Image (tube, rainbow, N blue to C red; front, top):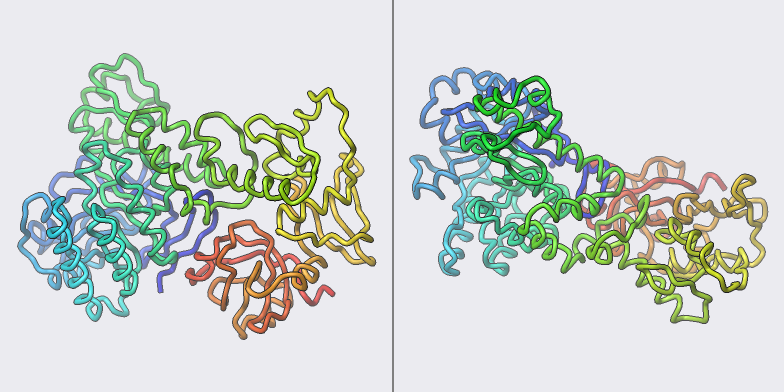
Length: 572
């Protein structure tokens, strides 16, 4: 069982925790590549820049450092005591056509040197010929199947490589078959030549297929992810782990990394960065010292990772992509390709965020924008609702102006209107908002409406002395209490539900956490942040709350929380 859980989400990006035998890795992150024969920086220096884990090459270690690494173990050999991943030699196979080892031998070697994350010796896909691609896929799957007994019950996490991405049908079949095998992580391979040609948009379709077919409890790794300006897009599509030698390769070529591209360090006149290397050294020192340039490149790499994580926390990963898409024509094409079909991302994207601003041509392609427009149109078509025109959104029911995403722009729009409008009653607003959020009206006529004494906005509803629901101030979302019973009566299983296994029923009824591993079934159409009913397998109502994850993640993750338990049976 892969020890992986999700702590925060935005778009397809997720902050997660992956447990290895050498410690925890917080994702998304980059594993800097260490060449055992050519260390531009020592592992201790790399760790100073923010690296949690490293990747090195098991084939080179076996070929050139066998005795020393077997004697010391990989961690002492590299003098790095965090998680270490070892590639199998597939990259050398791709570059040079052959390697002097077998799949069985390289796996045994990785176990003996005590690697934390190992990789089978897969067959890279270099050709564009379909028959040749099919051969590499079939051979990779066959090698994966042959390793199953060898890697069974090991503490080492093992990677199941995914090959054949140039042919979507073959690639989908590869992902499906690898997903059925006993792997902990899946990795997209053979992308380096494409990355080197700046054909970044080619990565979107294989990443979509991986997210559709691979289990959510297995982190997704990209071999040779390259430049940090790519990271926001890759993470948004679901990449959890990246590896890159760019920090070193670019330093060898005298290139200075930024989050928006590279500069030839010899041509620079100023240092535009405030990393420790750039603040503690003069430009000339960095120009003349490859190690300092490489260390700067790593600082930039991990600064971008931190920015991505903060964006996920804030729900602003889309805005970060919008900004980065203007840095290079290849990134604009990448953004165009990514936003041309957002269905895979939309299923994983939280239902509300802190804000939604219309700032570019891409804003109207956001999943939450399209979701809001679709729901608003449905309500308008159902009956005669008074609307107001909001720039970027069109005609919106006035009753929804306090709901996300309109709550951040509706009031200013109303102030600018000159034509008097009919006042929408609080009860009608609530009924329309109920349809917006839940698809049905669960607001009774006799409900008591409680407002904030400071703002005058609706804060909670009470029915017969019992708290019925809370209206969240930030987005007007309904947080169900007694209203859960009404929603349960008006909907059919499994709609808007998570059903629990028998052993968890008693705990959920008492208000305990709803954990993924105890979920029996889930409505296949839930998004993160949605109101949800918690029931037993016979549809008996146990509790209500809000989802933390999407349906596929809830069903497939074995660790972590599925939903917040806000109201539970024992409260009544």
